[in-house]
Length: 97
Image 1 (cartoon, rainbow, N blue to C red):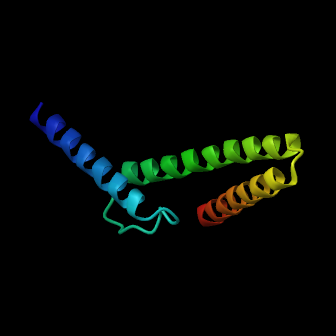
Image 2 (image 1 turned 180 degrees about the horizontal axis):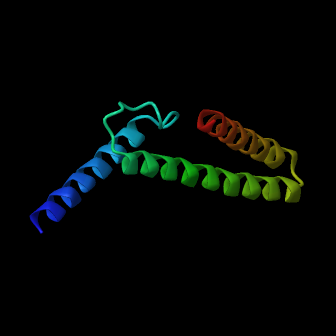
Image 3 (image 1 turned 135 degrees about the vertical axis):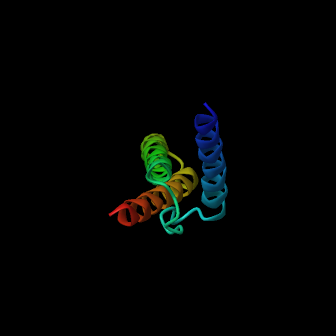
């Protein structure tokens, strides 16, 4: 019973550490030291997958907004948002490979 508590505490401390590292480095999540357990690495990949999914939703949102826009000023602003989201998605997908 005591072993299970210790491993749960270790897991929670690693989750906190991963969250701190991901908030510090937003571009490359995988450039950590190799002292993580395999489960922690899986958690890091899950965070990366969540970011990719969010960016895909953002791209769909901005593409829809851009398609509905009639004013040139709104179209240019929304096009910039769309380009930024697409470039961020491309960076994340390249770093995943």
